[in-house]
Image (cartoon, rainbow, N blue to C red; front, side, top):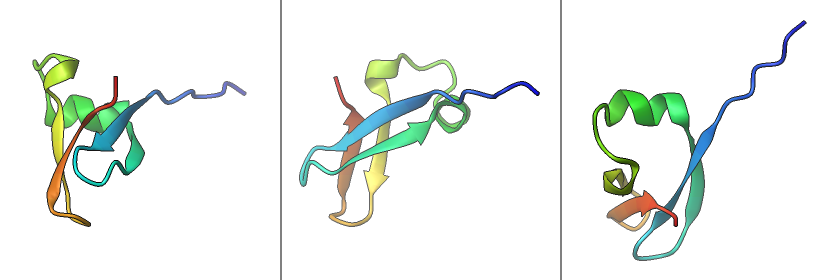
Length: 54
Protein backbone atom coordinates (compact mmCIF):
# COMPACT_ATOMS: atom_id res chain seq x y z
CA UNK A 1 0.00 0.00 0.00
CA UNK A 2 1.35 3.42 -0.90
CA UNK A 3 0.98 6.38 1.38
CA UNK A 4 -0.23 9.65 -0.13
CA UNK A 5 1.56 12.65 1.30
CA UNK A 6 -0.47 15.79 0.82
CA UNK A 7 1.44 19.05 0.81
CA UNK A 8 -0.02 22.06 2.56
CA UNK A 9 0.48 25.81 2.43
CA UNK A 10 0.54 27.68 5.72
CA UNK A 11 -1.73 30.73 5.58
CA UNK A 12 -1.85 33.48 8.21
CA UNK A 13 -4.44 36.19 8.86
CA UNK A 14 -2.97 39.67 8.58
CA UNK A 15 -5.26 41.01 11.30
CA UNK A 16 -5.70 38.41 14.06
CA UNK A 17 -2.62 36.26 13.17
CA UNK A 18 -4.64 33.02 13.05
CA UNK A 19 -2.77 30.35 11.09
CA UNK A 20 -4.09 27.40 9.13
CA UNK A 21 -2.65 24.85 6.73
CA UNK A 22 -4.50 24.76 3.41
CA UNK A 23 -4.16 21.74 1.12
CA UNK A 24 -1.91 22.43 -1.85
CA UNK A 25 -4.48 20.98 -4.30
CA UNK A 26 -7.03 23.60 -3.19
CA UNK A 27 -4.53 26.41 -3.59
CA UNK A 28 -3.68 25.15 -7.08
CA UNK A 29 -7.37 25.15 -8.00
CA UNK A 30 -7.98 28.67 -6.72
CA UNK A 31 -4.75 30.29 -7.84
CA UNK A 32 -3.66 28.60 -11.03
CA UNK A 33 -0.86 30.54 -12.72
CA UNK A 34 -0.26 32.78 -9.70
CA UNK A 35 3.05 32.94 -7.80
CA UNK A 36 2.80 31.68 -4.23
CA UNK A 37 3.52 35.10 -2.70
CA UNK A 38 0.28 36.39 -4.30
CA UNK A 39 -2.03 33.82 -2.70
CA UNK A 40 -4.68 35.51 -0.61
CA UNK A 41 -7.90 34.22 0.96
CA UNK A 42 -10.70 35.80 2.98
CA UNK A 43 -10.84 34.85 6.67
CA UNK A 44 -14.50 35.12 7.81
CA UNK A 45 -13.81 35.03 11.56
CA UNK A 46 -12.34 38.51 11.64
CA UNK A 47 -13.36 39.59 8.13
CA UNK A 48 -9.83 40.14 6.95
CA UNK A 49 -7.37 38.49 4.56
CA UNK A 50 -5.05 35.51 4.90
CA UNK A 51 -1.73 35.36 3.10
CA UNK A 52 1.03 32.78 2.80
CA UNK A 53 3.15 32.78 5.94
CA UNK A 54 6.78 33.37 5.11
